[in-house]
Image (cartoon, rainbow, N blue to C red; front, side, top):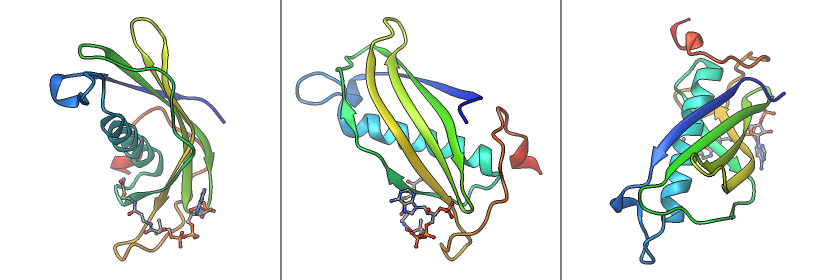
Length: 132
Ligand SMILES: CC(=O)SCCNC(=O)CCNC(=O)[C@H](O)C(C)(C)COP(=O)(O)OP(=O)(O)OC[C@H]1O[C@@H](n2cnc3c(N)ncnc32)[C@H](O)[C@@H]1OP(=O)(O)O
């Protein structure tokens, strides 16, 4: 399962930089997780979603101040309580790969934080499930 894709863009600003003047890796992971959670929320139709697992992280190339980054998510799999996304980050201008995560697993939870079945089996490209 790879379609539809979800793309968000981030501009690297001065407050996002590390001591070498490049994008701080932790900031990039924050973006990847936060935007991924929003994709998961739109897929599952609930805002009660938590991150359970991330696959190995490899920072392939650096991003610098002023770079425009594209975070592209795919929906890989629906489980009983989880949804698994993939994420590729690239420079929106050059297309150079910055980071790829094979899988990020988000879990639907109840108010006590216990996993609950979400009942979803098919990906959506929209936000209509939030209004169901
Ligand atoms: C958006 C954010 O930043 S949220 C903040 C960061 N995240 C958190 O604080 C979450 C902390 N973790 C937890 O509270 C708990 O681990 C929970 C509630 C998420 C899950 O509880 P668990 O006891 O692990 O539940 P369980 O073993 O049933 O797993 C839940 C789902 O995650 C999947 N899962 C669990 N571990 C993994 C793993 N290592 N890799 C892939 N999937 C996994 C399971 O397969 C299951 O999916 P399924 O129901 O679709 O088959």
